Length: 439
Image (cartoon, rainbow, N blue to C red; front, side, top):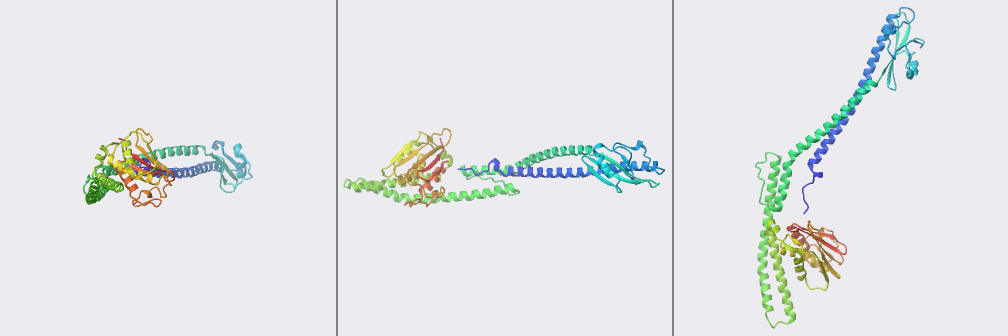
């Protein structure tokens, strides 16, 4: 049967690790963007302060040197990109860089302090007047390149730090969740194993002092209830079998005694033989169900039978029919008792014979190393029920007259030996597939 335990791709542990990694990665991206915005604003503010300091220094030297009506500018105070203009906008000293000539000319007559960014260069135009009343404008430029280089280095460091922090958070989340959820996975695997092989065992971790102990206590309680339900079912099965065996034995004995009478007519003899065979089949069915209810899984796994012999027995026990039953199976050995396997196959084969028009095929393609897949198909009208509904007790297809218990019993018996039964194809030709454990 399909395992109920989650696989690695869908485990809660993986979800936590992925979620933690995504959250940390998103946080690091946001921090990097914020840091770059702050650094860009800080760089602009720093450049503006540098420009202001340089402009103030030039203005101070010009004011101190200009004692007459003109402007006197000490050339020793001038750096590259510094130009002093008079009130008319004529350059007194300094040469504007070629790529900034237009911006310098435009700002040479400004009456207020003005900032402007041209490409990768920042400009400041600061007007001034000397004690004698002579006015002028100082223009100073500063390149952003050194500051942008620092921003790039900060971006690289931020990306590397973010990647390392994300990887570290993922590793820590994986370690923490592994330590925290490891016991839960062990409990789940252990409970699954016990449910298949030994329902009498318990975790018994003591008082529920933490979440793990509480979960173990809940699982112990659940196992107690499951065990009680199974014991009740086994007791009911045993009581029903005991009550049914006595009248069945009487019926079979009466039929056998009647068959010993030489005065029976042929029709009566055939009738009594049918009664005796039906009683024996019912007795075998009851015995098989008791074996399934009472026998442990380890004892079932230790049993084995030959598939071709079981199928031959199933075909021999079919009611009289005029159909062609084609059997094509290898001499495989099945890890199950012959009686249980016979009772599992019989309802499916009998249904196929009942609904088939001309033939029934029983095949088992070779699948060395894996489970045996036994296919039972017929050329009847098909099944008019959903795949899973057809295996529900009391369900019949196409107005069948039976009790609707055959397929449900067949699937239950197949699963009791570690196999399964599925409806592979509902439309004609109908195909049922048994998966049987190879011995």
